[in-house]
Length: 334
Ligand code: KG4
Image 1 (cartoon, rainbow, N blue to C red):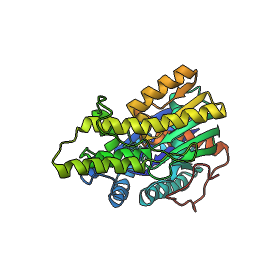
Image 2 (image 1 turned 180 degrees about the vertical axis):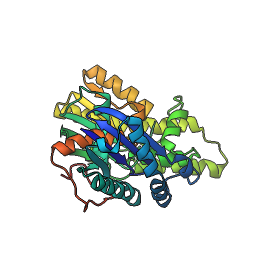
Image 3 (image 1 turned 90 degrees about the vertical axis):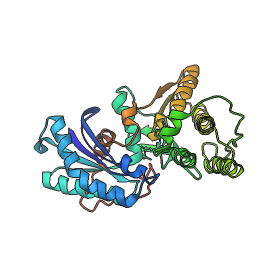
Image 4 (image 1 turned 120 degrees about the horizontal axis):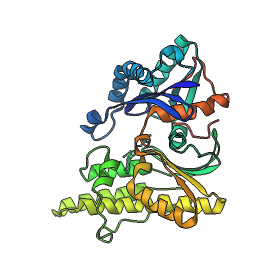
């Protein structure tokens, strides 16, 4: 079954052709250069750029896959969660395309797609497994009990891990997307130089990153007021270490308590070098299997939407022309 999948939840317009776990094409048109000027994504600009790009990106995906529109068996689209105006572009385009081709329309939850990025890279990965989902807008530990069945164990009480990286990077003057830049320049040296708090939160598998973010902002502002220079690579490494401590501790605790030996990491922050390195070591010590997507599937892309769509279709999750975009929706909505 050849699925044409569409992703437009934030600042990448992407269309892919996917057959099972096999990616025939995956075209991504990124808007990062434009949002960089503003230090973050401007929703109105994002929607306009998706509208301009989507037809051409779609044609290119079909061409690169070596098929025609007549070969498409279903259209899948990210419908939630994300920037509402951005999502609406993809959803309306998908509705029109499915109707004109006379094929089913499959609605796909964005976080489920991030998990499915692992199915593309790891053909042997099958539920049940434990998943740490870390992106710009979400930080969640969930049990993936089946391809379309999820149980949320914990989530962030305030900021997402990616948001914490992006905002602390921004206040240090680093280029957008901050998490990526911070990870590149972080230099491990003296972790006592900036005594950042170790975030604590009551829920056993919940997270909190806003206290850490505030502490970094205060550190930078205090130094500026006193005319002191901040050692940006060291402060970056300290933030990264604190965020990773919390993500790794809670994930391992959940795996141990619930008896999971298979752990997947998904979402944009799964590209973080320290998270990958440390979690790999810890999993190796415990005899756990760790899965994370290759870097090209960590960020937003349509291939992962197509990889999840087949399971949604098999589960009867098919939409009609009343499908709407939704800005917030938990992963276990259905
Ligand atoms: O999953 P994603 O592409 O978009 C959302 O759905 O949110 O995640 C984007 C987030 C941004 O916050 C970005 O800074 C972060 O992922 N990110 C990273 C790295 N690469 C991307 N954060 C830390 N280290 C990285 N290497």
